[in-house]
Image (tube, rainbow, N blue to C red; front, side):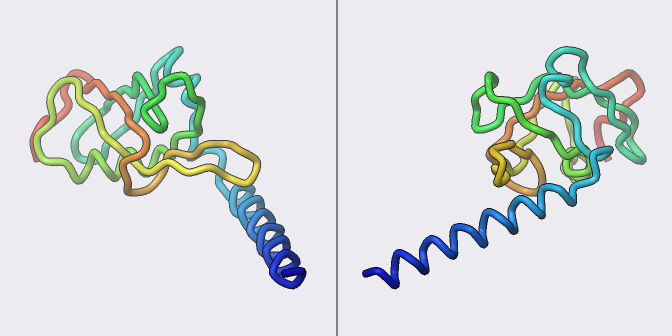
Length: 125
């Protein structure tokens, strides 16, 4: 039992160290806080289609939670969509770093983002 507890604590420390190192390697320019999105909206260019504005973010379907949104993940998700309406939602993955910060990035469904298309946006590919 003593060996099991020692092994479990060693694994927890290794996990925390690797998660903290991973979160420090993120380029800050690729992320924007959900607070900024909610307060001001964030414009994002979708290559070949035009501009959109991110309006709302709800990590884990809770709009009160704060998170960091990975803009390339949002752009990739929208680029892969066929037809979109003037206002629509997407979902991307949400996960927590070792320091408790939530990140919305990559393919998944845990983070809901509400988006509006700007004038001239190509609604269909």
